Image (cartoon, rainbow, N blue to C red; front, side, top):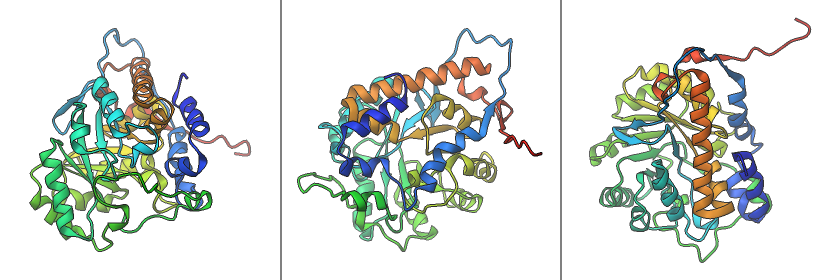
Length: 342
């Protein structure tokens, strides 16, 4: 397999449809799910020539921690549905690649098991109806050596995922979800709760699920150390903006006051470069790595990381850049659709 698309097809063939639907599907008509991928085709590169690109480094920092490339692993739940080692396999691959891994609250491995892999890790958090359980999760993250907490704010209710319903997806009775439940998220969370979380937390706080300039501004005002542009992989509210489409207005609203990340639809290293050009500090992918895990466990995740890293590096060189920090807005332009009647 030579690219992520190959892994997508292989995973679809390998995992039973009634299980794979949870990882591949989206909400309702899946317009946003498809839009996340399509958004990258609406931008094209403006490469610069005669630049010395004999030495290229992909290294960058995220909230002060050095990583090997500006692409991280987004949180995706219940990874032992795809491979026996689940999150541990993903963490080992991330550690070997020097990549950041974000661990879902709905992990099927313990924090201790994941920590033993040695990867740089952020913990993805939901605010639950039970506030004490939310505080317990924060304490667990701190004690387990996570370097930041990623608060997901776009799930007051679970999106209508009709592919799951049609194919009969269920969580196996013998699958142990180590911390919390998907169905305990609170629909009453407000910006005041964010202040409460910030007050209880002595780790950097990333707000994930922002799609508008208004919420980006509020996130910064309420103590966010970073804003993560995301529509939950098209799995919550259908017909919202693709992550890449929402990115520019969020970057503008933040105005350099904190780091900005984006996810949704990453299938190529060139997608990461377009995200950087539009103002993201880094991009995150979930499904690409879920496919790698499903196909070949730790080695599959490692290979997907390697493929995307190679594409980012090659893209940087051909763009005329020697590092992620050199990718600017001037390196991309919108594709103007061809109208034969114009």
